[in-house]
Length: 163
Image 1 (tube, rainbow, N blue to C red):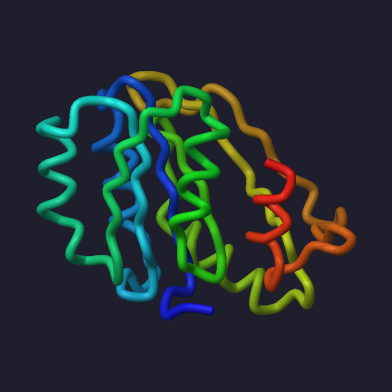
Image 2 (tube, rainbow, N blue to C red):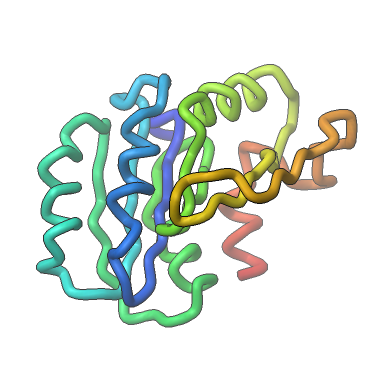
């Protein structure tokens, strides 16, 4: 499908307050950045200082797309990111969230080792403003991660049909 193994779609709405931290968590990944595409779909001032700093560092990625939208709902921003993406695997990150440093490596490995995988949900932690973990949600990995009729080959098409 593309030269990018993974497309990372960061969505941001009316703020850039945490965007730099979300970006830094993507930049800190132990996965080859040249095999990744980063798309930031946002609705705030295009001249944001944080966005300018991100653009200066974006050359680490195989592809970078800065997509200013007029859409309000998060689902519209996600859809615009999906429509724009070219990666074989899609990862979503909201501007006030962070990736663990090995997230992309785990996601990629899981997709490569599992036939017809269409969706993979990872664990998540809730952290406070000081960066302390206040809640952990751990996923039972023995549960099926396969969705009937949806796989890595047709996920984008199926996603766009229902959204």
